[in-house]
Length: 209
Picture 1: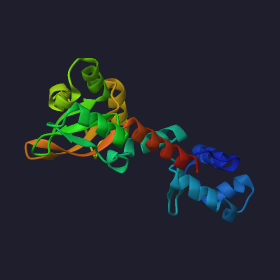
Picture 2: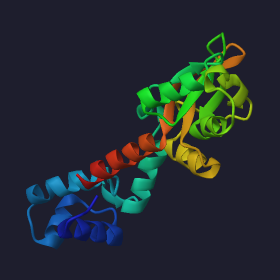
Picture 3: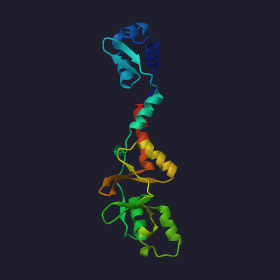
């Protein structure tokens, strides 16, 4: 959020002499109280100032950076996750290739007969199989996938920034979003690098408005 010259001056006035009333700020700037009303409303709603009835305005100590950081920390997976693309353990490597192509994804979340997460299949897993001499029609993905408990996952109430850090540190393209079901985990969504990018683009556009 970019502040205009008058809004920056208001913040400086409040910093210097808080609590300061709207009338006092208007007098310092040589404008009317009505003229200041929109600026004060913006600064209060944005979190730069705190208004207390019959007392005046206080500076919160917030900066554009800290406000943006707070917004990022509040972003939850549930608001940005996309639909999961799953495959059964019994599916063949060839079927997995077709699914990835049709769904335009880089990984599949593999579920067992109870519909619970049992593994993740990546493009690298399929590439290693394709390079070998095995017939991909006869190779079940359960043989070549990464298995639980060696699977990184997240939950819908996790912070988006934490998921972004996991994708970077683990050098993976996507995480399954899960919830506990009985003794296992049910896949309810996916978070990818694309989801993360869209989330931060949305935040940046909102901050600029």
